[in-house]
Length: 324
Image (cartoon, rainbow, N blue to C red; front, top):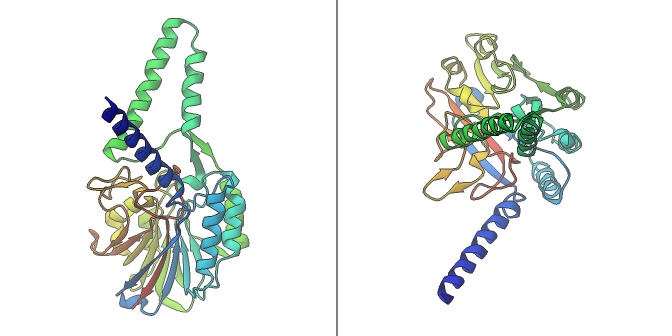
């Protein structure tokens, strides 16, 4: 009996320790992930890729991570800076977003961005349960309350099933101030490529294109890539890497993406609990992908923030690419 109590206490303490580490251990630990790519059309380019900041209400983890980010990138000299969306977790993150934009290092060929799903809306578990409770309270009779409760639990079960199946999630969406975010990007000379393509300055042979978010926006992949001349090489920005597996994406030789957060919680032998998408497997939700179906290549960032406040075996990252 005593041995059982000891084992239960040890299990509880170990679980609490792991939970505390996932909440506060890895999340502030910003890392620099370097890549050295062989892609002759862009040889010599140095690229800084930032994704999925998920800035929201100010706390010590966000402040430490932002300060570390600014310190790390201040020593870099990129030719271009690529921002692949989810600046915001909610509107409270606009101040931190402005601080990041203000602290970006000079980029000889410009700063380019696309928006992510969270730039349009915050997904809130709290709001989800509040809505469930409101639907039940609004029912007029006990029978209708019971029916409403069954319906709401059915929606919760479908959400859990989508997490289990590693499918896309969307629930309890609260609109974010995307207009104010867009204004900030304009103030700090960030070129927002929402279904647009443009040549890099002085490089008519190398274009950069970006598409709107797959979940909350309206991406026009084929039309965007068709804007580049046939003899030009294309770098594509898409927040959601699922778009890189569409046949039209074969037009792009190099793709930058985020959205998956690397899975955030990566369990030994099992992989990521959820990858936020449908096309990347749990055992490889981020990194370099050299053999896409269309023959291109892609870098998916683990991101700089989180949608839920946990990371385990998946620290946040800044991506630095040298093309040779």
